[in-house]
Length: 618
Image 1 (cartoon, helix red, strand yellow):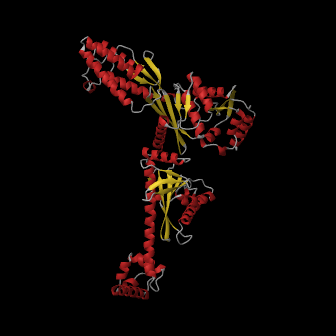
Image 2 (tube, one colour):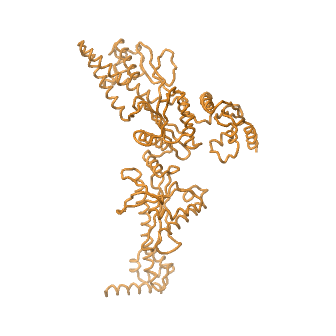
């Protein structure tokens, strides 16, 4: 009750705010800032927080529960509110804001002073005596550059301090593998070491092309001066740089400077993945997993804004995988920060689309790791989601197939795939009860009606029939899909339904939504998954049908005997298991079965003796 009164009090205060751009600042009882936001109209935006809580995601409801009071700052425009919001979030780091931490993309190359200096990656400037290069985008790029420089120029990677440790030990294995110049063993002079360190720093500053050009000139000069030992060392360095440069070209881009963003959404989490290209090479990858509290368009806006609000370089070209809310406002912020024009694009074809898809796959796999799924499982489900335009990742798939013999022993099988793997404990069998004869569409309607009736009864459990599937795949074409869609609509449910279409060789060819067909190419992982599901549901339903048909045939053989009905036939089959053993049993053995009288036993013997006589006569 106290919480309700507080919310009403805050709503009344919010309703008195002006319809003006600004920033609002939520605080808890101790006065600590817990959330900062911007608004085009403060009254409309802030009052929403303190209205009905049913419209808010869990994270927002939790934040509102902790709000004791709020402040606000008016601005002249929505853009000014955006800039102020970024500044205040960075200064205060409120608990409930989506923030991408500075230290994930903000690094330096640290150079300790001579004599016997060295290079290393660092997150912050914490040594007044050292020199720093940077800041650079992404710790990955800095660490890689430092490791490459040490490998090429044979700088020590150990923790020894020079000149203190010179001459105290023999050179380690790295010296003999030509990975270290071994100052610890006096294998290099101080002057030569300092020249080597300077060359390594220039390599990091200028990149491989500049380093190659300078070292080739030095090698020629050394050769002309007959300094063949130095020329040989430079030759080895050139080869090392070329080897590293070739290794870097695994992922390249025609656009020299660009960032690529993609958002993957699964369950209650989202992952923003980033690929950063500099000088045409992939130099850094990052990802951020956050709670879902907005639409994808809103989340892209918030995440990109947070990403570039830190001390990150804004490139001339940014690729994204979908629409962005308030794109013009975000673009203005980016261009003002960069000081030049910036392109914000959603690629539809070519290299850009390929890079966005690669980035999206990275985001999906990272989320899969977060939820404990294997990377290939996450990737194929992500492909299936995109292909069918599903609202969420199809982690829980149900598939149905009908099986009968000319309308007799009509059954259905249901198989379940969870995270792209069969979940056999959730498989279910259905005997068609509503009618007899052949009607595949009617059978499918009956099965889905029974399945969703069980859901209505058990939905509170969230397990088995109490769980809604993310996707239903029917073994059949548009007829089966169109037959069951009214059933699902009648229950007021929103479950995607597609049919699996076979070719004339009974192989999976396409998926249909009841209208157009979506072709599945043989080489795609989706083709393998859907084919596996279709084969499994067919196998399962056929197996159940054969089992039921066999029992029905056996039961009919016994019920043809005078005095033997369904109940006695089941008793006999339960005891003897097969018709052959019943045939071979004498009257005393048959009469020993509870429920079978002496007369029944004699009738059974007489029936099979007569059958045998007829078979011998023919």
